[in-house]
Length: 142
Image (cartoon, rainbow, N blue to C red; front, side, top):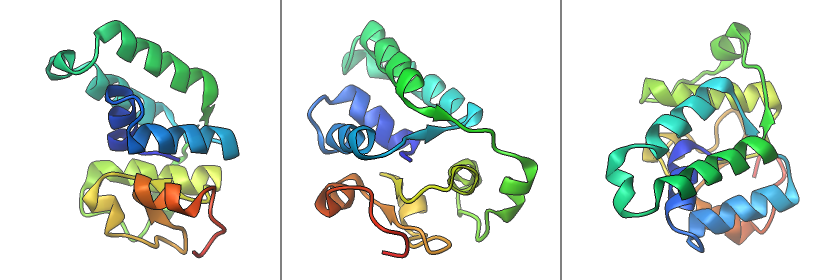
């Protein structure tokens, strides 16, 4: 899984470390999203402040690519309740619940609040650079 901050960076800077991490995740594993994480990505990616970095149509195409290639996972209230310890930024708890719901092997994040949780419930929370260094989906508990 990749969080919103990583996906936004990947969309805005083709060839960047987050973009490379997304390409690696898509080629070596399954990228999972939920309704709420997709909605957040859409809202953030379409902010006018990003018009200076990437055309709106290019950002829409990126979002369509994510929707096409990612697996949509239902996140239940039970998944949300099991997402402990929680993140110090409550809006990031959606990624923890999604990790549980999809049985994720790793969360790739550029968000300091999520990275501070590494490892979370025995699962790695890695920066895009660390994920690239590992070279593929890491084994659990690494």
